[in-house]
Image 1 (cartoon, rainbow, N blue to C red):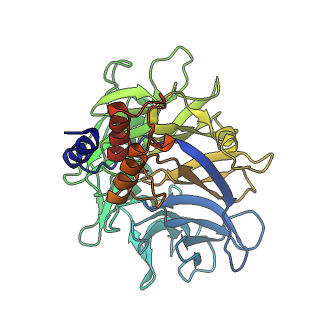
Image 2: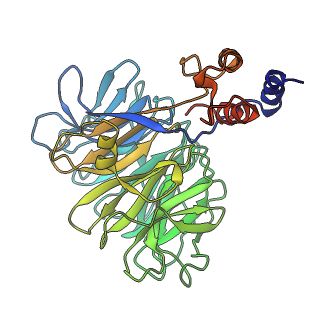
Length: 426
């Protein structure tokens, strides 16, 4: 069997992969505005996994404060303004969106006391639906607050109260709002959830003011997260992010370092580790927010009560990198003096990121372009035509087929091509 036949056979055996650790080759940066009215997006709070749908809050009158929620369909470039539900005071805040963009989760002014709010769901057909609150909830200052929506839009999680002791909740149309297992000494909040709703995480009041916690989304039972040897007992901190499949938890917490500051951490199959050193700025603490299918982790550093700085750990390897500097190294040209405070979400393929900035600065979106060396046809897809193009180049000793760049055309080039091909394009 010759080398070209070996290539065909090997590709047939390897199949088509879906993950990649491709190189990021360029980045673009833009602020988010309503393309018709020019109104500013005050914050971008969530994005669908494919990067199409973005939700957050709008500034409609230019006073640099949010006035309404919005949903942006990037495919059609349509902004939908989501106002409060027929109430003259108070602002609808939008926090989460379903994968298909049809359901939006947020907070709406309480119909009785408009200085308070309750969790709500919005759709094009029905407008806002008040999700209510737990039976003993006080005005603390909310009756309930939403945090995340399942991928299909049928499950919502968040915070309600027993008096003024926090309780995590899970809501569906069939069950209404249900209290999650009360952990620690109260002070619970359900903050993040896997796409299918089977894993819920956040915090509870344990031995510390906040202690990382998780719940089973089906049984609603939960447990404080043990530090698995990082320190004795529970993790002082909280879960702030989760992978779509629920296999990776992200957060901020004290992991026993000598600086006594919180570090950004991740939990994979019960194993806890700091993300890229835990932070980018000495004396600040790190928070991990989201992760894509290629392992890239995004987050931010905070000095309490003051500033924040966004960071990225590309492909989950190496240190966390200051986000603005990293973007500008890729040609993004972030306007001078713009501080990107928090990355709220990253798309599953890692191409899009959204977030918010310092007071008075609009929300933003970043788009990344990746190198995909096995895409010989340049159409963004890996298929038979790329194999054929590689084989033609290989047979002609074309430099593009010298995958290991050793000036020879041999099995090692075929092996390198197979590795890139089966990895796929991000």
